[in-house]
Image (cartoon, rainbow, N blue to C red):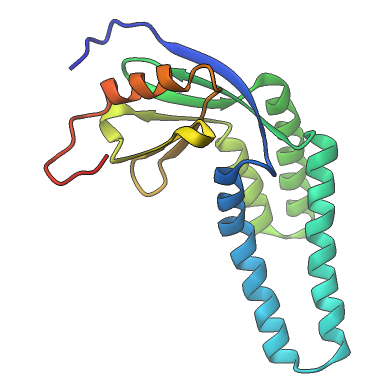
Length: 191
């Protein structure tokens, strides 16, 4: 076991949202499944009605407008900062993008409360709370190394997940740091 007195590994990275396979898979789960189910229910319930096309068109337009917003407001990138030390892994949104997120999340909460949509307000608050996430090394239960995409996926509890988006230059250093700091695997563990 390494001592708590060791150097930290720090880096910033700009990850293209719509080109990174890890982000696209997460978007597919978070957006694709719910909207796909809604579209399926609309098709099954409305039969061959013309209104079905309008509803599906509205869903498609909403997805396209969201894509345009992300491309315009965030330049299609996730600006992340990572710090790995002897105690934990820290992932946070870079300061400039964090300010933008704070504006969007605050507007989401305020407009949702004014319109009586408490679920959307809750989503805005949850999004703001996830601007900085840490995961202690002893909480990590699963690690996936993806050298081709320079990404390391860390999982702790059910809601504890961090994707370390590395650069081509620092991937090996980060992988080595992670391997040194995760608890030794139990027999049969394929980390």
